[in-house]
Image (cartoon, rainbow, N blue to C red):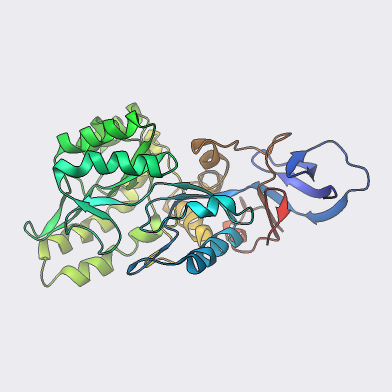
Length: 357
């Protein structure tokens, strides 16, 4: 394939450069005869750190629909996806050069009858560690637990498992070389997970200042999925007739979400952008989550970094477009740091050195 030239400011430092793509890799050495592909603002490939390929409202979908989901995410600029739980086996995506790079967490693991039907392995406490070991071996270095969900007996959010059971499961995952994350809306489940050495929390609306301090001490990351949190009033309304305590909890968590999450950010918890695409949330809308993070209170550059260079480094890739790195980047016609809505309209999406959108 002939060398291609891309010109413009290269983020995160914003230095204007001529970036060439040769054999799928980045080089800044001038390539004679290179075709100029696109000029614009060049951003390291975006990262959706909480996405669900292969899911719809009812559970797993087939490969054709999964492919379309992945294409929508890719065309929105998400070139690296942390699939944060799926009932479908999406390992085949690794073999597709035209689809985003994928880091799978395997299937969600939840308590029996305590999660969305058709999504998770639903297990009892004595089974949890065995299923964690299984998903650690099946996935790409992550395991996804359902930390809390509504308990029909309690009528409110409640931890899925006792703290000691979660702790053993986290130890098991780490022994198998996998990191652990957990869905957590409420407060009660968080202390045990953090103290057990969990690596990441999803949503995190139940955090308090003392828990945030423990997260910082343990280098626990947070993917808040801000757009998903905006749906809490819908969840409260749907549950109010049968579960008024749950409705009150969700209403309160929603009201305090900005303060809660910004306290975590300002204390030094690493936040990353996740669209929660899949199920009730559409794919291809990572830009919406970056905008939502900015509206929450992050600077535009912080919000963009949470969906690009910082997130890539967190997941084990180079966050900068250095000499010899894989040519995974997105080009825009204006500086997204000045207007994050620019992320909704990429000029070019380059994956593994190929212009794919």
